[in-house]
Image (cartoon, rainbow, N blue to C red):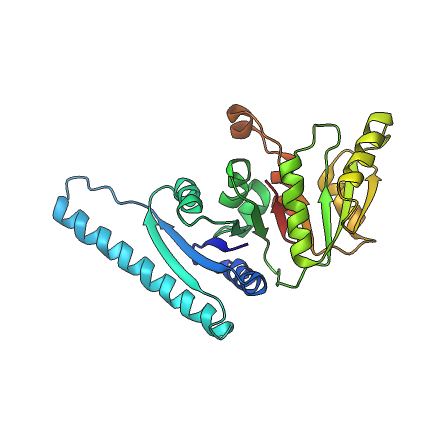
Length: 271
């Protein structure tokens, strides 16, 4: 991992993702890029001169805020992480996707709740909206999460669907980075022979990595995880998002999005 991209909106809850991304960058010896996206201005009868001045003022303010955040983060780690800043206007989702490419980011880190924590928990947020669109692994940080080296990672699998081997390899690489055990789970009340064979196949793919596997009763992943966490420790949840059509993505919340929305520990969407 060489570059971590951290979009921030400077909201009161943003510091959880800021601090988590910083400590992760320190652990992985990665560069941290702070990104702030602000709304573009529209001049309606106010003239090009006004628009130019206000656009520059917006940019200068964003750079000042990013600079203050950069200074705070560098001070926290005594200069041991390279931190750069980017300020741009535009649509948030679109600019974030562009900067993932521009910065050659290996990981996108975002706070889970943004500037409306209650609404984000109930309806989702920009972070959860980006899950179906991300082209790099995406780590979502809920409020209250502090970085500690993950030792137990829960990897939730849907073995009824063809396995995304690239995403599974991403999950394995992250587990190896932390020296963590992958505790794989699949929610299925009565796993038949096909699912049993699929489970054996996954375990064979990870035979050189510390892991466990079990089927969990139920049909709802978030509820099954709640029950699982009552008896098992987990520092991180990993999910392998499935591709969906544009229309379904617009109309329905995916299992990955729902799980991330209600999570109390960090969630990695591995792609």
